[in-house]
Image 1 (cartoon, rainbow, N blue to C red):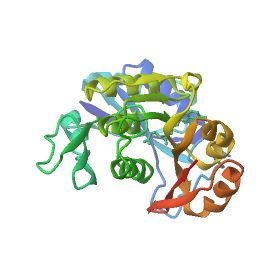
Image 2: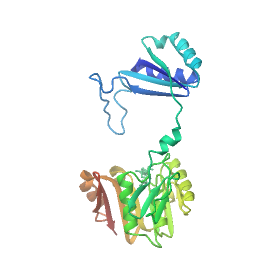
Image 3: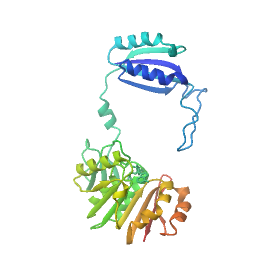
Image 4: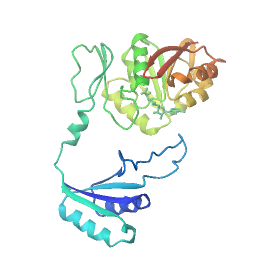
Length: 293
Ligand SMILES: C[S@@+](CC[C@H](N)C(=O)[O-])C[C@H]1O[C@@H](n2cnc3c(N)ncnc32)[C@H](O)[C@@H]1O
C-alpha cells in the first residue's frame, strides 16, 4: 500500500477528505500538524456542546492507496481543484503490509477481576487460575472489563453472587455485567440500554457466553429485581434515581457506578429520598455506590 501525506488548513480538511475518498483512498486519517510543537493549540469543549472550533489550525491528512498510480493520479486531480490552493504534498511512500487484526488483538489481553474471575478475549486461552470466565471481544459497545467502573461492578457481583436472583442491568453496553450476573447464578437477567447497538452486542455476547438474558430498550425492565446494576454516569444516575430504586425489591441491592469521587455527595443527596447510598469500592478516582433497600 502507499501512503500519501498532505498538509492543509482547517477549512480545507473536510473537502480534502471527501475528495480523497472519492478518489478511491482506502482510508483517510487526519492529525494535528502542529502537535508536540510550540504552535500546538489545545481544543477545549464542554461535554454535550459542540466544540468551539471544528479542527486544528493545520492538519496532516494521510490517505492510503492500494497502488502508487492511484495516489499519483489523486495528487494530479487534487492540484487542479480550487479548494486545494495552499495545500502541500508532503510525500508519497510505500507502507509495509501489517497484520492489523493481529496487531489490534495483541493490545487486548485477559483482564482479572478477582484472582479466579477473568474477562478473556476469544483469541486468548483463559489463564489456568480462572474458574469463572466471561468471553468478550472489544466491539462497538462499552464494557470490556478494562474500565474501573465495569471492574468494580464485576468485583461486587463476584463478592455478592446473585444466586437464584432476578437481576436488572440498566445501561448494559456490551452486556458484561448481565453476563457476569448470569455466570454467578442469577436465575433471570434483564439487560436494557437506550442504544440499540448495545442491545444487539449484549445479545451476541450472551450467546457467546452460553447464558440466557432478556435484552431490550429500557421500557423492557418490568417489576422488581433483587439486584439492580447501573453503570452509567452521575448525571443520568441522578435523573434515574426514582426509576432505578422503584425496580429494587424490598431487601434488594442497588449498585451504581460511573461516579467520580468528587460526585459522592451529590449522588447521596439525589438518592436520599429512596435509599442510603454508601461507597463500597474505589478505583482510579471512580467510586462504586451501593444501597440495600
Ligand atoms: C458506561 S456504559 C456501561 C456498560 C456496561 N454496563 C459496563 O458496566 O461496562 C453506559 C451504558 O449506559 C447506556 N445509557 C446511557 N444513558 C442511559 C439511559 N438513560 N438509560 C439506559 N441506558 C443508558 C449507554 O448507552 C451505555 O451503553
